[in-house]
Length: 394
Ligand code: AMP
Ligand code: MG
Image 1 (cartoon, rainbow, N blue to C red):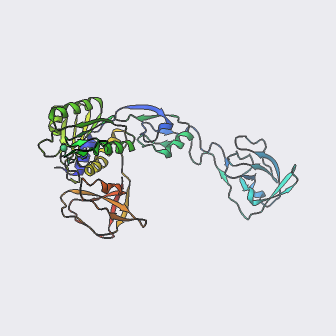
Image 2: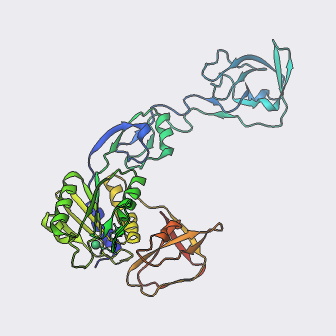
Image 3: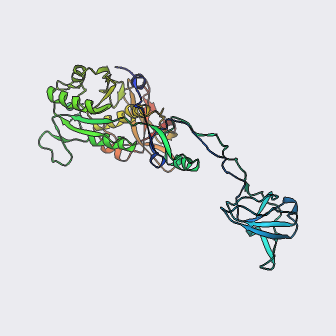
């Protein structure tokens, strides 16, 4: 049995990327950049008014100012602002030559006639109210680095610099297969000694959330030949195969042997983690196999903790899960401490962390109200009330 950190290191070290492709920036969310993106212009591209108001010279603020033109956004100014003059200006329009300040419309009184308006600044002081050319970005500046996992926040950045086609890493193709003679699909009523197949749909949903659209291969009954045929087909069509069940020590847990017979080298099949001890990782012929524990809570955790970082790495991204340091609302005890343990938790409105009733690795209902999971390291049996814990969002 190896530690979880070792298991993660072994699998991440074997990961590969699967080439690149060019996509529209509108499809960027969830993809990983395979090129750095630079700006093709200064942003803002010109000195721009931040307000609706009057562009003038700061030294003239105390004077009545004659309005010489109206400058709209999208239309360049025609006149320079001379002493004692100003131009009415809209937010987003170019600051005219000669002006260094925009006074807000709400801080002015308007005098003179409609044809020859004159304004007077009523305030005591004002900011320039100008967004200066290049203050956000200079032409040629890097706006996004290769390896960034693109999110909705990045779409407007790509739009702003005009990068409408982007090079991203290809997504790995992922197959999912359940094992177990006892399993029936969720739409069926289980017979005596049967249960519904929870894991396949859980894994497909977890992967869909990170943008991976899996191929599902169904249920392999606990028969060595059937298991071999189904794994072999799924491996032929995918880069990564995720199996559930069949990795424990039972007489019908054929997965490790079947993988060996298909030239998949099993790097480990037991990890010192709870839940999730019977976890397998193997590779061969540029194919990768994860064998997840049969119990649904275990397979949920292992997909989050081990498979997800691996898939992100295959997508060209060094993923670090978001973690919140919060205090435990109560004392939490566990009996054994020989494995790294993960527990589902809830966070209250004060930011305190609460244990969730959890009967073990088959208790899938405990995850329904969980907002995060917390680790309890090897050797630690007690988390004191008020002690900081690292809550990882799920
Ligand atoms: P195994 O790892 O195959 O020994 O399975 C461990 C436990 O998980 C057994 O109680 C199985 O019935 C259960 N199990 C295995 N696969 C699934 C699945 N796909 N959905 C729900 N429970 C499962
Ligand atoms: Mg089984």
